[in-house]
Image 1: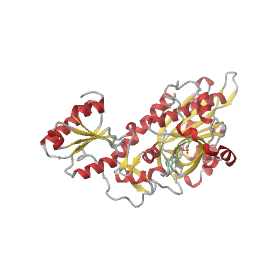
Image 2: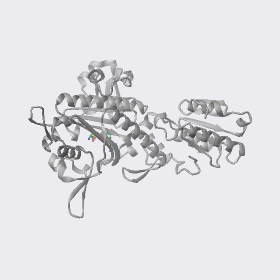
Image 3: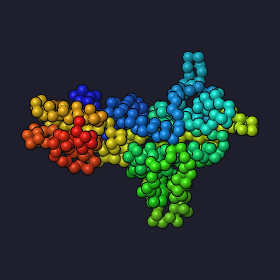
Image 4: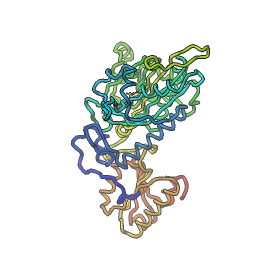
Length: 440
Ligand code: 5CA
């Protein structure tokens, strides 16, 4: 992609409305644009990151054995009346009336809809277990939408639902998602700590929130310091195996979100306690038969008895993660994207656009990176070097290749790592080699 063609409306000034660093950088880098309070458009740079995160989330859900489907954003009120949540949900639910005067709503979550789909199609224990998920926009008319896409009114969520015959099955599904979440966040370059949580309006009696620690987190959380750098080999685990021992070892340490904190335990921990602020990037729930009983979702078991399906639900804040990653990975100059979610793999800074040699070298690097499957952004604007450096640092691509007339005379370009700030002069081939593992 060429910067002269790319739609990336950056801002020079810090926007007044942005109170936290992720919101500020997302607006300045032209990743998002506010449409109304808590509702955003995703511009191309932001959209690329959102899609990359979504894809990693999807791969880990698939790997855990969940199947993707897509439910609508608009739901009928009827099923929420069945579960009893139509009134409970209060003002957070955006209620809509269609032309036939039917009560509809913009879904804040999908327990009812998935339970309806499931009960209408499944009769026998042979159809269990199942895990179904989708990645879809949700709407919650939050009292205080803030921090940009971190607490939006419209936001993208991955929500998965598990269906099992009994408690043991449901527990296996919960554990599998628990580990899939840790893997997902690890691949996103994040350290997310599972913490005992309050299930809130979703209900149920077992729930964990996955928190990334950051000063700008919305809530105060506390945990045993050992959780801060626990090193468990998640990648080697059988994704569909029994995860109980892994989950047990992770939950054996004290870790609690604000509603679940226990002053007595915390006093006992002494220096082993860390209190910090956290951003909730995922939340998993086991709620047994809460929805299946209310909505009549039963199957026949092996003996022919009718039993209510055991369920759980598992959410990841996909759009919130974009902000969460920036909160966890930035410096004063801008974003530092982990490679897995960077909007482009590398930026090519052509220090003298219009100069035949600089243009040719930049093009060569761009083409060869593309041939090797790497996505690059060339800054081919007619701008001063300082502007180009600042913008490239702001948008945070992991690598910068700086092409200038003086370097080219000596047959070299500069390769800069955004994370470490280290710059190294090398030949074009050596730079390509370093980024792709082979000369294009
Ligand atoms: N049905 C369950 C799980 S599928 C559910 O709705 N859980 S939740 O309420 O905890 O939401 C799941 C995740 O969505 C949260 O962990 C959070 O990361 C994200 N999320 C929730 N509200 C917002 C919001 N207003 N803006 C951005 N992300 C949000």
